[in-house]
Amino acid sequence: MTISQTPLTKETITDFFADLQDRICRALEEADGTGTFREDAWQRPGGGGGRSRTMAGGTVIEKGGVGYSVVHGEATEATLRSLNLTEPAEFYATGVSIVIHPRNPMVPIIHMNVRYFEMSTGHNWFGGGIDLTPHYVVAEDARWFHQHLKTVCDRHDPAYHPKFKPWADDYFFIPHRQETRGIGGIFFDYLKPTSDTHKAELFAFVQDVGNAFAPIYTHFMHQNRDLPFGEREKNWQLLRRGRYVEFNLVWDRGTKFGLETNGRTESILMSMPPQANWIYDFRPEPGSPESQTLDHLKKGINWIHA
Amino acid sequence: MTISQTPLTKETITDFFADLQDRICRALEEADGTGTFREDAWQRPGGGGGRSRTMAGGTVIEKGGVGYSVVHGEATEATLRSLNLTEPAEFYATGVSIVIHPRNPMVPIIHMNVRYFEMSTGHNWFGGGIDLTPHYVVAEDARWFHQHLKTVCDRHDPAYHPKFKPWADDYFFIPHRQETRGIGGIFFDYLKPTSDTHKAELFAFVQDVGNAFAPIYTHFMHQNRDLPFGEREKNWQLLRRGRYVEFNLVWDRGTKFGLETNGRTESILMSMPPQANWIYDFRPEPGSPESQTLDHLKKGINWIHA
Picture 1 (tube, rainbow over the protein chains, first blue to last red):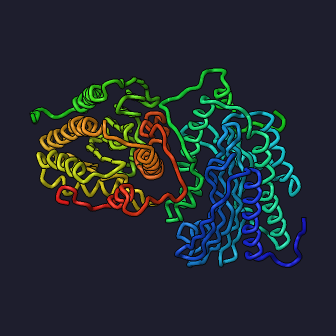
Picture 2: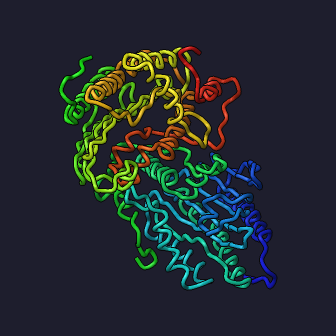
Picture 3: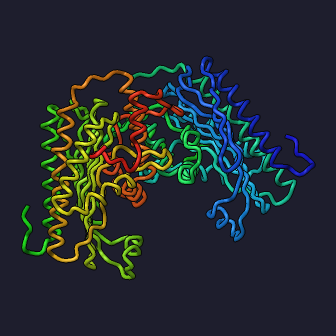
């Protein structure tokens, strides 16, 4: 990892995110084998735009989106208030956001986001996270996933993982179900640099998180793509996707903020599954793999040393 | 219609709703022919409870819920604030709530709610509404539906329909899609009695709205149940159900309030369809029946005189 000696500009960060989207899409296409991403470039009326890349009907990926955006303009009242600013100011936000819904229920759903936010007043911070939503929780896979993220975190600051792992448990939680969305991962926000050197360090961490996505997910794609499944597993996957929809539309702050502030709807809702089902008060048989999965959708599980 | 001479009690209103649920379930079962409702009685920890009745896999009704509830207890801070009350007080709320998702895309989705709210301070009001969400908008059916509701309204007050029809257009609207959920209907809230006689009149109106549900929906069940459809129509239905999910989870005040205040999740989410699909940026062919339907998902259409 190289720590640049000159102050980091928003252009450098933006360029990294644009390139990250390219590299992730290539890696996912290669791992899928047949699916390809379709690009939809868009402009934001208030300033900036993005490139939404979506795949549908791949061999492994049933529906997925990899979004990159760089938007700017007048900051909202809410943003100004949250920063105790009384005068109008401009914001600049850029990032990459991903959700992948696989065809095979034995391959987990994954989400990743890395982002940078800067105000014309000088305030700036990084945020992001990765979390995994297996339709069937497998302890060994969960351990591998969390260990991978811990290794990424520990390379930068031993204080990161103990803070960002529980933050993911808290963030990716569905209060009305009293369930976590999946097995969590890491989540972080408002990582504010205290110096140029610190900013370069934070950026190096965010780069590492972004770069971790493709190796992590292609690992699960390769490992689980040919695992057998039947109607029972497919039906369970569709119900779990229903929960994914519930989390994203009712609780996810990014989704809610986007939809309520006139964001680009199709790009925000790239996270929706191709299909989701609901059954009134469905309860899996006690002791079944489905029931065991529910037992693992709890905060505070230490998967690495489980 | 009989206007009672003695002051109306909450028990009388509650009994009406309980009976309304029974009668509607019987009418829907009869019209469906094979589907039956399964009852799930529940208690609310803070006071009261309900009976959720759900049907799945009927001949006409693929998934539907008819809920009745009567809940009471300490009013929330938000409720007290909205009434300018500074002291704790008790609330009492009762009502019937319905959403029906049909199997055949040519049969519309329907929603109905009638409710009564009373505070220990004496504040009390009625609310409710009926709205129709056809997967394919048919002008003649829309006209029939709106005419039926207008007739119900006009029997009670000629000022109702001109107010409650646009209120439904505004309420059943999906801002992030800039679409109405369906063709609307009527919506009303905070109908506050100014006297005992007025309260009896308001109740008579709410009774009429509740009683209108079964004739309206069984009309569409009978008329459209055997209309032919293929894969194309089924796929469109699944996408429209996705919009229904988006409205209910992102914008519907009742659903949001329920999920955020620890309501009974399964009863609140009885409104979810059996299956919903999402396709990135799906746009129907210009001039197609699907595209014509989108053209009709707008506020302010006068269906009766269209």
